[in-house]
Length: 439
Image 1 (tube, one colour):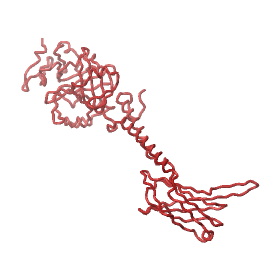
Image 2 (tube, helix red, strand yellow):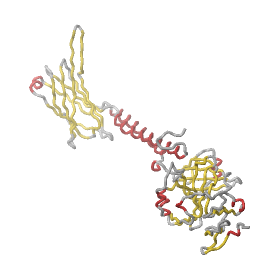
Image 3 (tube, helix red, strand yellow):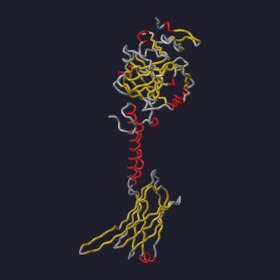
Image 4 (cartoon, helix red, strand yellow):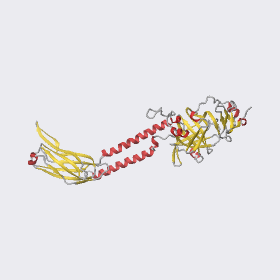
């Protein structure tokens, strides 16, 4: 009867494995570390420690990713990696949570694992400096490692459904291994604690289909169908939403405080005051014109909000100032008007009045610089008048402040909603980014 040792042989490539069932001879890549071998042809599983038992395991209907046949070679960062095995795994309590694990052997002799779950790839390698015991006993769900903040993603037990190729470890008796995944996208740490207390640690990162496609020079991988969000897939362009939120809120606070201080220090400060005499003779014969003295406006990031007011004593009359604000450096002109009108009387024994002797108008986003006013007077006056024209800085320019604050606040809200939805998709709690979740 055949046994483990009798399956080893030699071919033109060196040491090989001869299947005890179909007699197919396969090249070995790790003959001295081999523990499990699943025949690429008939799928029969051979075990170093459980030879007879594992021969009976069902594996004949195994289906594997066609891109990663045994012996396929890929190159990453100038190092060649050879596919030596492939395992189909799934979470014990969630059968639909499954992935393919491709075992890679580097030309330097290191083993790594390229995992693919519904088109989402993660590449992990053994890492011996991860403080696994400290992490597993820490009641906190987050920790820092190598300058990155990792958060707990999931805990689970898995089982191997199918396998093919050679493995330097036992991949069958794995149901009692407690697994924990921690993520700091695009990086991931996986910790596996065995029943005997042994702990294996893996450090890896998310791989795009394009990266894997380039690695193995196989365009089919890039066009592979993809579902959901990868366990360590960075989202939103890998933006740190928490840091952006903190920075954004601090920026909003700064803008609001700056606006309040700026408004309070400038509010109602007069920058121009003119007294305009309007003789009746001129008012009735033509529309008089006037030019104010030059004045300076403060420089402001959002521009100045200005209030112009005119006061004239009226009695069933109106006066309109057609004004032009002229920037003496650029020649830019802003036209506007200020109207004062006041009417009163008595009808059926009741007195009435309407209008205001003071007219006011505001201008926003006026840049700093040297200006003067040019104006034309229109009126219905019946006696000589004196018009008092005043220009003041308005109160806190909240409209300009809101123009800055609202888009930033909306962006913060949108990013946080998208982050929440992405994370729910990552954990399988949501089927789509904008649809309703499953709960």
